[in-house]
Length: 228
Image (cartoon, rainbow, N blue to C red; front, side, top):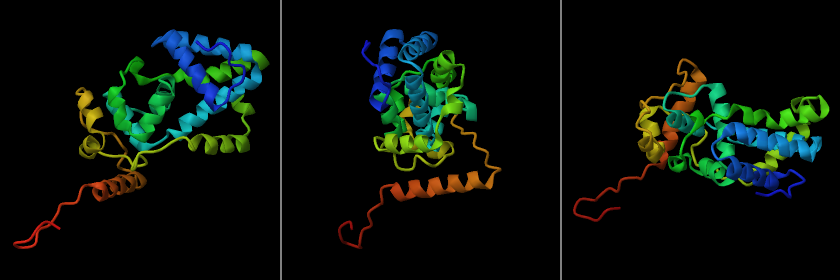
């Protein structure tokens, strides 16, 4: 356990998450207490930094392809709020799991789900610590210009899987995330996108077109000739 962290930046953020994970395992209540106590001990500025970095990582993971993966892992669907809580849960798994999931959501086939893949209170831990120290909300203290700069900085470390920006329906999702779908036989094979919305229908069509372009092209043969 790293007890020497005195400043929260993108690297020490993940070090603190890893320390909490190693100390608390899958006990999310214990992880909350661990993180809050550490942040309170570091003071309001570091609690605010943690809050902003956590929410930036949540925003950077706001991709339809990851949302589809969350639905498969949860096996019964994933609401808007549920996806926020899933992204917090994903962050709690550590930097390697988080970055791997964005590089390829299918890598989540190797991650053991627990706690319904939701960690709602993790989103609030920086705010809880900040409020205890100042009687103010970290949400109200976030500087939007600084936050946009933070997003750009953190995004430099992320490689997104091609097509992660698109939602998919069941058959296409099984092709996009084959290992994850196979690892969760309890998933009913259906996604629950609101196809009554034109914007959603357009995104699904765009995803199908993207996947078709990525599919291996069949070779054609000339009569009596070799494949070309």
